[in-house]
Image (cartoon, rainbow, N blue to C red):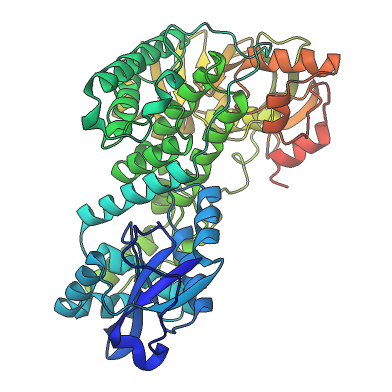
Length: 568
């Protein structure tokens, strides 16, 4: 049951009836105990609810459980450092049964702070309220609730988030399981102890167990070192960067106040990912690769199940998509640096108009500027007088999985890379590059050619968007690498060049086999899956991850692939 305590300032509306079972002197239970007080914004009455333990605020216009529940659901849903399951659990815990209880002596420090700040800075909430005009009532009140929280400053917001994360990850922990001894994906003997060795110290204060903390952190460093040693030579991120990032996650973030292990709650990785994204959103692809890669490694050592590793991967992908989404007209749109640069380059008049509007003190109208899909259909250059016939093969997999396809000479190598991902059923969730073995040139997208990437390879990097397929020679062999963690590698052979108009999009002529399964763990794990599927006994953990919908890797549907290439 959820109880909302009110004082004398609301007795005219709610009366003075006090519940017999309630006790404000007892230790409050998180998200089951709230305090409420009236709040005036722009001379209109509102009601401020504050959660007893975390200080989480909810603003309503009416004193009804129904409106409180709706606004609370909207507000909690916007917290991206929680998983969807945790949000659901907290929502259910808070609004399953809700009552108002008169308690004239009940007080709450955070409620007082919010009230004082609102009285001293009324213009902040009035401005926030004005910006929500036109939105549905619960959306408007949800945004106002966040403004109340943010009004006390970043430090207070961070403190609340830490309390909320601790509550969610301790009460609704996403505990990973240990795989069965016979599963084939456990291919690496760990050179470190299973973190569960220190499980009894979870959620205990760090300062009470300095020796234990030192042991755990040393063990974490051993796990990081072994993980880095297992990375392939083609791994594209600087190893020092990977080690620093994981050390920050395992030995700093998980020890800010309490002792937390990599196996305490998988949702901790999502919370850390969100905080990293908040600090440097432009590096989200690197953060994704480093965190998901480490948890894949933990599954290969048998510390966690493969399905647990995939759950971390799903959390992070979901969070990145929500974090990078734009609000209002652009809420569902996600832009890479490449796409944003293209928008600016292709809309100079719209940019100039927006600048002039801002200089005049007006809010720029960007409707037309952003009026295109987040993931446009993959199109190539206009047909040229040359057609390239290529044969691409997935390396190190049996039976042979390959595609024979044609592409226009005027298409860019970036277009060729995207076609490769489509035709082998990739999901565009990872970085990739294309190496010409004859020239030793490596072609990448502009966002992957950032300064942070330059120190870790000896190849000659080129912009894949500015180099055409027509630069390739007959019999050239290319190495296409997708996902630098799982390291899917494909050999691409230039088989034929004809002087005839090329197709508008790449077109598959023939092939064999399905392709890859994103995030399964690389070609070795794909081979294990194929062999097990053929024998009729796929690992239960893998079935759970795939949702019981198993893929027949022998299937090949040319028409389906060509529809994807045409954006249909």
